[in-house]
Amino acid sequence: MTDHRWMGAALALADRGVGRTAPNPNVGCLIVRDGRVVGRGWTQPGGRPHAEAMALAQAGEAAKGATAYVTLEPCAHVSTRGPACTDLLIAARVARIVAAMGDPDPRTNGEGFARARAAGIAVTTGVREAEARAMIAGFLTRRAKSRPFVTLKLATSLDGRIARPDGESRWITGPQARAHTHLERSRHEAILIGRGTLEADAPRLDVRLPGLESRSPRRILLSRTPEPGWETIASPAAIGDLAGVDRLMVEGGAKTASAFLAAGLVDRLLLYRAPILIGDGRAALSDIGLARLSDAHGRWRLTDSRMLGSDRLEVYERG
Amino acid sequence: MTDHRWMGAALALADRGVGRTAPNPNVGCLIVRDGRVVGRGWTQPGGRPHAEAMALAQAGEAAKGATAYVTLEPCAHVSTRGPACTDLLIAARVARIVAAMGDPDPRTNGEGFARARAAGIAVTTGVREAEARAMIAGFLTRRAKSRPFVTLKLATSLDGRIARPDGESRWITGPQARAHTHLERSRHEAILIGRGTLEADAPRLDVRLPGLESRSPRRILLSRTPEPGWETIASPAAIGDLAGVDRLMVEGGAKTASAFLAAGLVDRLLLYRAPILIGDGRAALSDIGLARLSDAHGRWRLTDSRMLGSDRLEVYERG
Image (cartoon, each protein chain N blue to C red):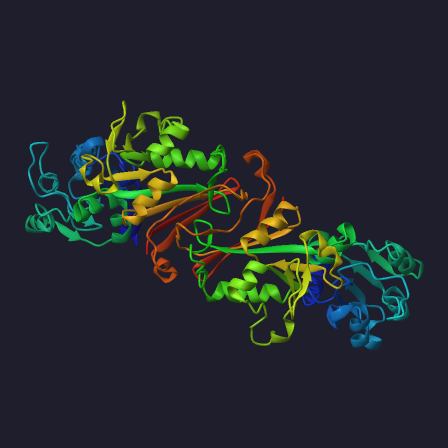
């Protein structure tokens, strides 16, 4: 139970790096000695320093005999960018390592745990593993599918419209929902829109939240022709080519959203719904390649639901 | 606090008559003596006997000195269909009447309370009035607007579709949501559909829930031409002509739903949403006469939300 709680704090540290650490996973590390926190670390923007290095530097001598809570197995390989975290933990003489999950990177993949055990450190693994996996979905998706983890955002009326027939779409959702979208932007390395949205709305796609202005992600345009000031990709299938992007947010419009869904490239849906009816208007989606209604079921699993002012946010992930 | 709780029980009795008592309001009555229930009554199908008559008949001599909890002011007028409930309560020599609200019927409208007080009965009013008003929304809407209280039911995908492009619509929602729709049917005197739905789905519109089979409502078709086996009305504006219907449920399709919304005739929305995406398909609504997005806001207020299996039900009422 104590391990469970400390790991929760380590996960909260890992969360600070979401959308900023590619190509590395966003990891959290907490060093605890005699029931007191002596070091806290999380993967820094761009991937270095690692969480363990930061936490150990903070703990100093106090790390000796302490327990290190890490959301991912410490790395076992020496890089030109820094020492192996396993070696740092051994050198600091921690007594115990509690990890949420193993590192699938073949250069580590159990080697970190093995080397720590060989050095006399007690190792516990699998504490809050499901949460830890969700925390590094970007890293895991990039590794397993050679592409970023994709979040599709839709903001609709109760009847599934994203605009009136003349294109008027400001505003469907309210200020709290829009602020939440900005927070989500800050948790992705890049945002993608289609040419239709660019020409209709010319969105800034930046993060306009106090204190988070510097967290605006890269802007990607889905387009066969180049556009000044934008990175472009020609099709959804090309998202794997976006180096340094492990989490991609797709903000529409309907044609772009449908192209990603039809290609099976959406991992998570952010659905903001305002308590209004629009009637005739522009639909959230066009053809997504559905052949039968029965094929539509079982694909999406509700993972979060909350009110944002008078709007409701629902989050779905692959079922 | 005790009055509040007993009135809750009286409201639960009133609920038994929802959708069955037109042209009378569905009222509940509880007779309580020395902290024990000695009589329970609710308006019977078609409007008679009244709740008070039923509860007093059950209480017999035990009503003497008791408190009568009623969700609506007892009627003060003698009808060919039965005696005035105020007179019955006086004759039974109850000591106190606790009512949720006054009866807007001009034949009563305070006269029931006044006559009871004149007979030496203590009267308290306004206990849980908002709930009592919602309970008889059908009666109050008929009285105020000369038409039934209208509930519009929509069952959609997350992207607001009610069918695939070829019309396939079975099934979008799951069995729990469909059972809930049947329960809602049993709480309305009539259900209305349009000709398109009749021809596409030939729906039975009956209540197929164990024990409630006898509660199937009247079936109304929105159509300019007669149809064997159906009552028809030519336009939404004609719903006031449906005698004996104080609660009307509109089950679609899109054209019918939109016609009711455009005419401002929808009091309550029942929105069932399945966790699926359909993409290209039939929209829940067509033109509802919206001129600007800003006009869409503030019209609907969420009054209930719950999961039904993997579907979500949201209930909205006029804002």
